[in-house]
Image (cartoon, rainbow, N blue to C red; front, side, top):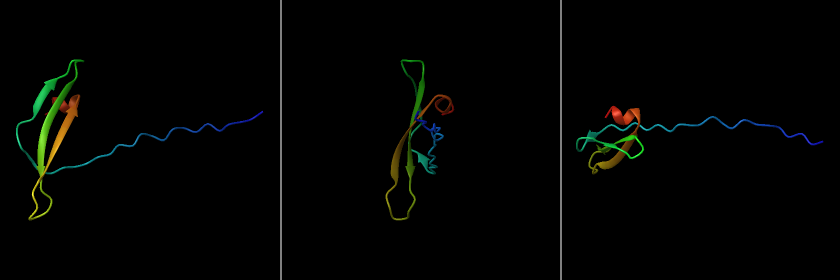
Length: 68
């Protein structure tokens, strides 16, 4: 008889990023077909002097989209 050890899957890991910058326009809240909401926005981030800003597109869903 062979015995196999059962191991649990590792807990999910969340990646977090914090962006400090300026919105380039008003956030746009849209209703998707399956009764979900999405909020699209663009943030201009400039972390170094004498460098052009990075424009980062962000999409939020669910409660975060409703908070936009």
